[in-house]
Length: 89
Image (tube, rainbow, N blue to C red; front, side):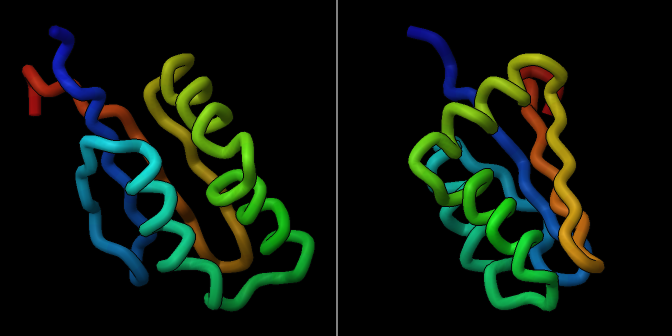
């Protein structure tokens, strides 16, 4: 059995670094943390698609598989998602 693919998410000043075993839970919590933060309507829509849309989990998983890190900005927010190697944690 393969170990879980851990992911750490954070939004400085809004959400401290938190590690999840389920990407879907990480995205849901991240969306809850940022959806009412100040940002433009187009930025809000982009984050909604990336974090809560029907293809969000696949989109984020693909980006994390490619580079291990995904950074999104919206207004003053800097969202960071990164894969965590359970061996080197």
